[in-house]
Image 1 (cartoon, rainbow, N blue to C red):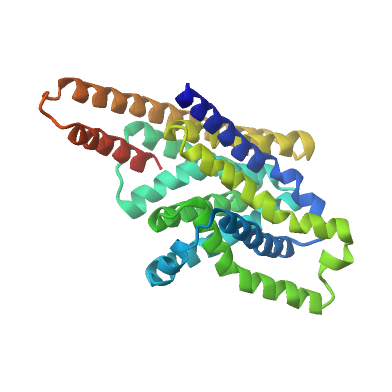
Image 2 (spheres, rainbow, N blue to C red; image 1 turned 120 degrees about the vertical axis):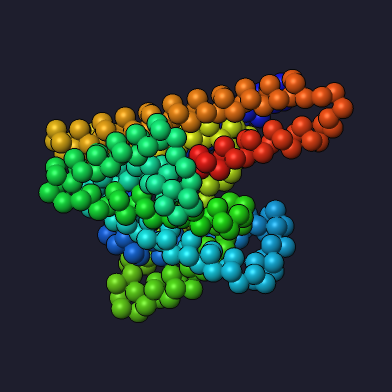
Length: 331
């Protein structure tokens, strides 16, 4: 019963995390007339305040000294912070300038970009269905480029920056709260400096916009931290395959908002491009679930046929290796 409750809590946390990421386009327009860079700077500053309070409550400080003593890891954190800054800055700009649908496309094709980067940078080998999915994704981008009269640069930049961020985070191998704290700490000084400079120029909206506007800008820290906390709760309670399916909630919500709420145009060529992307993701998801079932079946057969003298630890290690190698291929 406890395991069932844990899984239910994890599933609800995952839905909450990706659901909040999906409806965040409703929040950014509330911050006008603030520009995208000013909003981004406030997000950095207030996020550090939020995670600082969380760390203070949890008394999790030991990792800071270890991180400072490891310059390579600190360098990777800096790279991650720079890449996610590009991603968030462009995303905020896109939402506030009428490109919600194109932004959602970026997060739809992100899994395909992640797989392609795994092949090009990590030497990973793809299964036939994965090759078909990636090829279909490339075809979708070409169709959209013809329809737009230009490459969908917003979508591609969001997809590649977030895929790079995921790759760097994998190498850093830190907990969600700790890595977010480190990234925002790296960004805090330049973000605060920019806000102070903006204020000195008389262009800051934090004060001129009134108390309500200032409160909304301060809330960017909570908007950033809440889904990450929920995601962390989900990651330790539900299988990787379930998280993989839940991740599509965010771009689906963004797409629906772009079409139905923001009334962005959807000409036939854009529908065609999105249909190809959705086909690619369907193939990718089907292949991942099929591979996961095979992996579990192989682990069960191994456990059933293992000699009685085999130590439980050895059996666990063998099955764990299969699972981890599958997870590494799929991430």
